[in-house]
Length: 246
Image 1 (tube, one colour):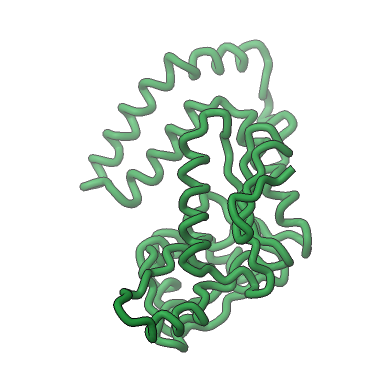
Image 2 (cartoon, rainbow, N blue to C red):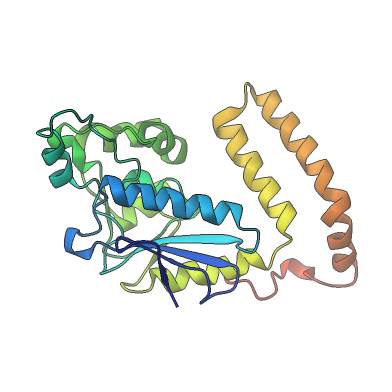
């Protein structure tokens, strides 16, 4: 059963063991994010990261929408409030999705920098993460023109990882989450961290390679030798991925 952190954000840690489902719950605003919702999302993700019983976080939205972006009604109201600074909304539609390792989208999904029309800039990592995922040329096209990108184009450019029928994105995400949980945990997370390090933190190509090797060395004794033993006994032979549907 889902546990409500607030009426705008729901967190479910019990329906699927080891999987946290965080749902934006503002269907009347197509799940647009206001400052209070952004704060709750941030807290929910921090809580997930600190809970060692939880292995995968699935971020979704209720009412048939993931997120329509910043709640511009709130932004417009803030400018008329004396003595207050505009509080940036630090989780948005496209930018929010870029935080994910894997993005599962439904066939009618639309991506876009639609804030281009209103003079609202990307301030939550969109200019950094988008080009890292799809390349500079495609990122500049999306960011400068604000044009809509449908699910199939998003898949082609690498912005989406899976396209599924309408209403099936959560089921697909949960299936992938369960598959990820079946893999050796230390190895999976070490390779994940190495990918992000090489993309955002490495000082050079050589630095990225060095970090990958050092991190991987620690995994070999913890999980790699045992995994090699399973292989030598016949597991995964002939390119078999056993029960994986990825």
